[in-house]
Image 1 (cartoon, rainbow, N blue to C red):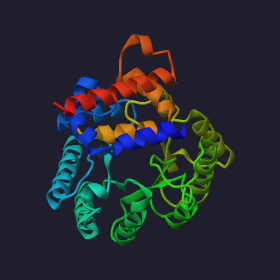
Image 2: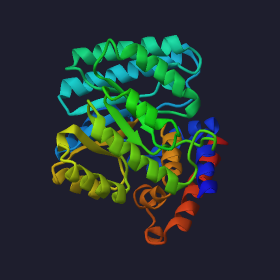
Image 3: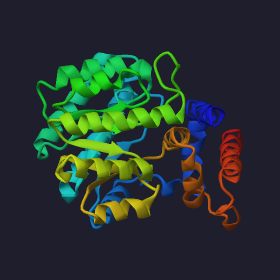
Image 4: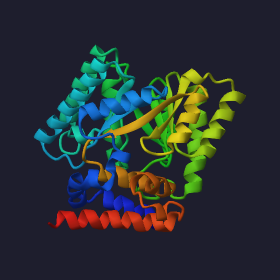
Amino acid sequence: MPLLKNFFITLSNNSYLNNAAKKVGPKMGANKVVAGNTIPELINTIEDLNNKNIAVTVDNLGEFVGTIEESLHAKEQILQIMDAIHQHNVNAHMSVKLSQLGAEFDLELAYENLREILLKANEYNNMHINIDTEKYASLQQIIQVLDRLKGEFRNVGTVIQAYLYDCHDLVDKYQDLRLRLVKGAYKEDESIAFQSKEDVDANYIKIIEQRLLNARNFTSIATHDHNIINHVKQFMKTHHIDKNKMEFQMLYGFRSDLAQQIANEGYNFTIYVPYGDDWFGYFMRRLAERPQNLSLAVKEFIKPKSIKRLGITTALISTLLLFLKCFKHCRR
C-alpha cells in the first residue's frame, strides 16, 4: 500500500485541488465526513453526538496559511467556535494546528495566537486545547511552543505519532499532559519513521501500553482498528486500569456503529469533528493514514449502490473520480 499512501499524501499537499474542492465539497458529499461550514451546523452535529453519550473535539479546517492575515482569521474562527461551544453548553473542545496559526512563517505569532486561544479556554471552564500533530518537520516547533505553554496552562496537550522512532521518548516526557496517541498520517522518511503497517501497529500498541501504565493525565487512543481497540480493552482489564483515565477516539463519518458500541460499553468516547470548507487535504490524509478508510469512505462519501460491496479497487477508482471532478471544476 505505500504507493496508495503516497498518492493521497500528494493530493493532500496540492493547493490547486484544495482550493477547487472548497467549491464542490457539498456536491461531492463532503458533509459525510465534515460537520458543515456554519456554526449552527456544527453545534447540531455536536448535540447529536452528545445525545449518544459521545464527546467531540473540533478541528477548524484550514490548509496553506501563509500570511499574518490568514493566521489571525483562523484564530478568530477558532475563538468563535469556542464561544458557540460555551454558549450552547455542549461537550466539546478544540484541536488546533500550529501551521494554521502561522508557525510556518512566524513561530512567535503562532505562539501568541495559541496563547490567546488558551486564555479564552480558561474562561470557559478550562476547555481542553489540543495541539494537533503535523508533518515531522514541524515537530520541534510543536514541542517548543508546548514547552512554553505547559507551565502556564493545564488545559493544553498534544498528539504522539506511533510511526516515529522517537515517540516513546515523547510519551515519557509528557506524562503530565493530556495526550492523544495515533498511528500517524503523513509520509515520512525511513530514517525517522517506521514504513510498514505491521511495524507501525506494533509500535502503536507499545506506546499505548507505556502510556496507560505510566500516565499522570488523561489519554486518548485514536484508532478505527478494532483489533487494537480489543487489545486495549483486555490490557486495561488485566492491569486494572480505570476507564475514566482514558478514552477512545474516532473520526467523524467513519465506523459510527463501532463508536456507538464502545460508548455503550461505558468507555469515554470522543469523535474528531472537522468543520469548514477546507476539507480536501484533511480527507486525503485520512485515506493515506489507513487504506481501509477507502472502503469506509466510499460507503458514506460516494453513494452509488453498485460500488458498496466491491472493495478497495473500486474505492480507489471512485476516489480518482473525485480527484478528476475537483480538477475539472478548478479549470473552469
